[in-house]
Image (cartoon, rainbow, N blue to C red):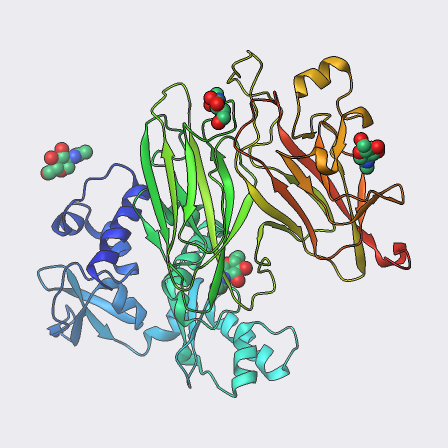
Length: 504
Ligand SMILES: *[C@@H]1O[C@H](CO)[C@@H](O)[C@H](O)[C@H]1NC(C)=O
Ligand SMILES: *[C@@H]1O[C@H](CO)[C@@H](O)[C@H](O)[C@H]1NC(C)=O
Ligand SMILES: *[C@@H]1O[C@H](CO)[C@@H](O)[C@H](O)[C@H]1NC(C)=O
Ligand SMILES: *[C@@H]1O[C@H](CO)[C@@H](O)[C@H](O)[C@H]1NC(C)=O
């Protein structure tokens, strides 16, 4: 482990542990004593180095000078101290091993014929758990856990001394937390099939949160504003760099668990706060406003890093906060989004929203005194739905909110006239020139619309059998002729193939 990593880990620990002052490594050891040291040694941080020389244990047996952690990893007994009290004189005692195996907690199983290890947790004894792994292997069960599958597939084997206790714990929260830490630490050398535990534990999630200036090449990391979970008002430029965790990664999915920035100006431009995602192969608009719950996909451009840059204005009346979850997606991963799909949904039915769609009107005013738009300016992106087997078509309709399709024209005027969300507000075809959506080859009530383009302040329910299922949204950079637009929130439902009409 190199020095840079040590610094990052310390920063992470610091963010978890609060305001403890440990600016130097000596502080780490001497001031916070054993407890912090055991944290440091979980990560194998080589802050203080000493020779693993021979030492004399307190029971006058010869041992080796190790950290306490290393000693427990090899099932040794700490017998007195060494290296100026930093290390323990670790005495091997074969009789001690069975005793360790009666404990519960986080364990690893090392394969006898290869490198990868399995990390698991148990509330029972790790010996019992080991026997279960072995039984799965012997009975060759189809749904076998990862260890048995590995042994079956590779023809490898394990023995009782393959199992080691990594951490004796038994509270559920600690089990999840420590299991995550060990999985994270050994991420590149695991037998575990899908380390789904990552992100399962809030404790771990907090541990791997990073903020301004950080970078990450791990799967499932979190980028948060500096004060998170508190909001912030300061003006700053905060960037986060995503590096491919390995060359087989093609894409990242960024989930906006929280993304709350200043609203765009009346024209829909993100001139106060703005999130820009650069360096990838995807075309991504500047994003601002309220976007919690949305997500987007970005393709890597070769092995170049992807950077998320969030610039905030110092207008103290606007609070901002973000927590973005970043998952790396392998090129052959079934959940990879098709190129060009900025958002990608895989359910049979659901709701899609344009960026910054919301239930309140913009507080920024147009020169004519009317409210501006919430819709973001200069966008052009695809929202895709994965076609489920047995389903051939898709239906798009307004969601329950009457403002759920207000993309061009004076929304305030349509409200005043009582035409909002009615056919009087439907606009299509060449009349849609500024902000609109595109749905390929749809029909309304079984009648082909003969146009793909829709805008205005209402949308008829559209049905299409064109594949792939995609809705494209386009906005320009000038909303002066519009007022009070909010964008869209549309419900989609996939249609069973039996509904298909011959000839489409
Ligand atoms: C941390 O230690 C430095 C150097 O000893 C000191 O200047 C600083 O005030 C300390 N900070 C806190 C929060 O204790
Ligand atoms: C990263 O994590 C996500 C979600 O847990 C998973 O779907 C994806 O396959 C993981 N990526 C890699 C490269 O392991
Ligand atoms: C498209 O616009 C034309 C002309 O305004 C209108 O007659 C037609 O009903 C519209 N179609 C839909 C599906 O809204
Ligand atoms: C909106 O855009 C138009 C055209 O670029 C510009 O003239 C106008 O000043 C802008 N309005 C605001 C409020 O930014």
